[in-house]
Length: 434
Image (cartoon, rainbow, N blue to C red; front, side, top):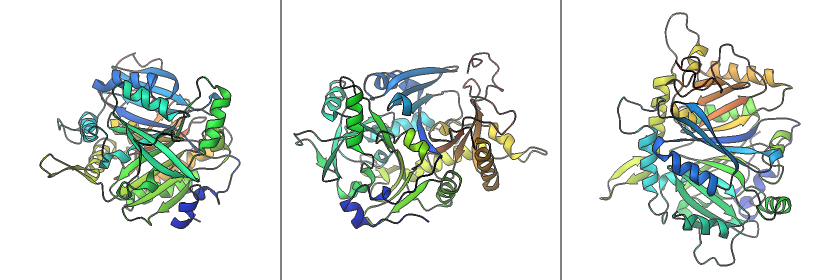
């Protein structure tokens, strides 16, 4: 049964959503988030990742023909999670040939909408949250490197959590932590900015203690949440998504709609795997969908409406339909179209089943559910099956990873030399080592 928590309970206990959770022996867990990046932003993104992101063990994987996967790990080595930025200029990304959008156009629109980070805008709900032990130090480094920083406060237990947000490739990268002594430059989230959406569910005291105890000179940072701006969370696409997350992966889904300006749906896990891979040290990871009806459309300088969150969702859905839709070719199976790809699948949250035991059954269950619901996706094989799934009108794709087993046959690995991101279709040896 879906958990129901009242707004009053949450006001007094930010961790109320976790009180009644049950713990299974094994289960699914959030293990990564991926963000598409334009080719022109490659160098700046890599510099940010290595110097300022708070991540460690950063690396670049050559995906072929100027394709790159730039990644950093977060948390401790025995419970690592990752954030990826994917550059793939040759992949399909446009709803219509030669339109001025694609990942390049939307990146420009969203990044420019942030301005100097002095006021909230619709696409600022698209963000990742990173816990840091010293938010003052982080802010100083960001500002020295030319970043504009939005500074906010949210209620946390009997005090505050501090938020320091910057814009990077059209997304918000937000550091959270215990507030500094001087709060002059900070202000609480305004009611119309939906404070509930920004709250910190992870255990900051536990993360701080573990990070400092392990390495006081260079404490680790933790990825704790990914947020997605929506125009609604009540479409058939969202209902299908939430149904699969609940039924196929055992996710805990909580809805909060007792708010003047927004509706928030939070997805998370509590089981042995989630506690060992993002949760063991207090870094409980959540996925949050926010419908903030006060912030839906950008405006031009003259006040006219410009692009909206709905435009963004519809555009991505049109790209998915264009390149992932099932063909009516005689004799072609639905799974044959799973060999297709578009660059917006590189915008995804990764959910993994890491155990060998039960992997085949989970893989089969995911496969059957995807076929039954006729959902667009791209399947890839990298030491196991990965189902990159596109739900209608949802801008964030979902990756179901059964990385210890494979169920399908003839599943390609990635290769960005092919517009369909397939090493089986690429006429090159550049991707042979992947």
